[in-house]
Length: 461
Image: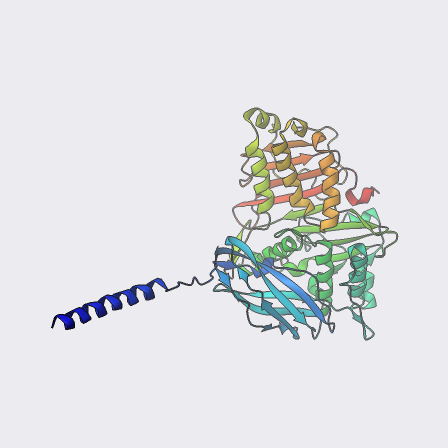
């Protein structure tokens, strides 16, 4: 009996030991999850061309990442324009905001929009990739290997190749001051524009137009450049879909115009313009020599659709607020204007009407950290163009920072009707005014980047 009891005791202890070891070997796996995936803010390494083999990547921002790893996904076939696949690249989520990368490859069947129903971390959205036409007379025009102004000219020619002779005559006009100054902050139905209306184009033509506009505004910074252009278009569409505005609004009411003939020699301007966004890039002898005037506005300031929240001008106002918050009481008193503002000073039509004297707080008296914040404000505007040109303009403005002035009015929070901010230097001129709402009751920002010397490439008449 004692032997039996001893045997049972040993067996019991061994069992407990076995259970304890098994428990220690259990591994808990955290499933990757995010709270939002923003396809509308995705960026692509290059633009595919119809009937041409393509390899590229898409970078899609997300928020609410939990820091967990995730494996590569399965291939997702494109719809709309077929022939492409998108595959999620394995990685590890950030704890908070980050980016997911998709490898895209294949041969697109046509020009237009290739759509991919993607999912990451339990969230889904539709990724849209513009496929350019690039074909005329059965010959494929591939602009992806070109860079800088050569690529701009190539894409401009590819767009023209999709148009009729009548359309080209409407698109391409003489380079004159009377033509290049025709932009406005009003819908095109209230203030006529030059060029071709985007809403009048076929799917193939629109894809080619968008590929060109994307190249003109190919920023390396999320929520700037072409991201911002698309969101401003989306804001106009939102006004209509929300039942607040009629058909005079909407992304189809934006225009694209060429002033002069796009070429690597001589001077020409390409303008994208409509209600709340004007891009006016001037090129001379193969270089971007002017990116101003460059106008942006938005109403509403922020909105949510399809589970995604948009706020295309928040980076600008946040940078201004951060700079003002860094100033001492004495500096704020010097920077604050005694005037109140209901809009920007240099509105459309007030060409070359820069004030003859500077007012506000001169940046020469700022600390290095404060100067960096002032340059951060400027970057939110120079980042709306291609990276190489943005670097060139920022270097010029940085060299003149000690002769640049800061002025503001209102609360300084830059989110209230009547708030106003300006940076004014030997070249740079940036304004933002929180106007009263037109469609909604909240504030309604208007902002412009100009250049005292190179606005319209110096063209004055």
